[in-house]
Length: 323
Image (cartoon, rainbow, N blue to C red; front, side, top):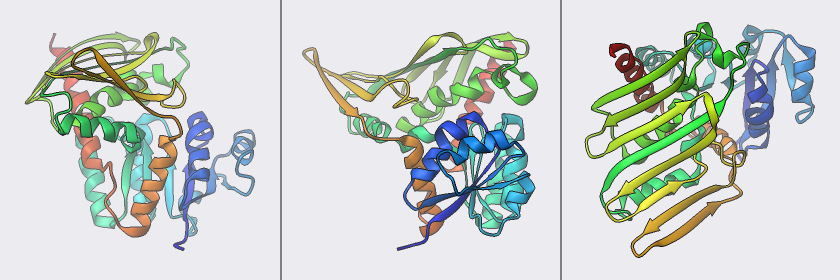
């Protein structure tokens, strides 16, 4: 049996403690080996499910650990590019929380460094590792709903805590970077298309976007989405064709917001449900990453894909500034 990939985590973020740390710990072919934090209290949260984890007092010390093969980066958005570069230069494979960069052109440099080092670097875009999204892609590609005409999505939650990092402009906060990546990226993943034109109305508070209404023209379909950090919690993606509809009821937080489920609406008012109750997309993501590192197989979500989603976010901000 091939040896497990030894993982380290840079920073003891709540999300890392609650989701990605346990996922690395549970994933086949992976081992959660180290954490970088100067806080004993935060480290104890990880030791609760991984008692033998080695705690480094700094990020640099963890990157210097020769036993670590790969690192997961859950740092604030504005630090992602810096620490992805440092990790690659230290010889570590890197899975970085989204968005991996603040602008699309920043990802070009990461792609170049990835290729120069021969290491794997990717954005932690977990939804494309979930089988429900592969099923949606299959349904659309095989014409199960006829010709795709329109895609619409919504992702919202309410957070008006000004001390929260998602509401701070200097650390890359705002709804589009936090959750717009999902409404944008999922449509791109399913269709393989890129937007030709985009229009946006964005509400800003204290320098961060809190409500965004986005419309886009893709080569073969139209698109509309609402993304907000000031609306009641909701998430849904709908793929509307000439002969049917695929509705993704829990598209982004499967297992947390609810059970992953597709509604397939077909002629004569027929509705079929397909459910995926046992899948943890964070675990699937770690397993796929570890397999790519160990066996050299292509990773399902390369930086080139992430660049396309970031470009769409950049387009939305640019379009809003023109109005």
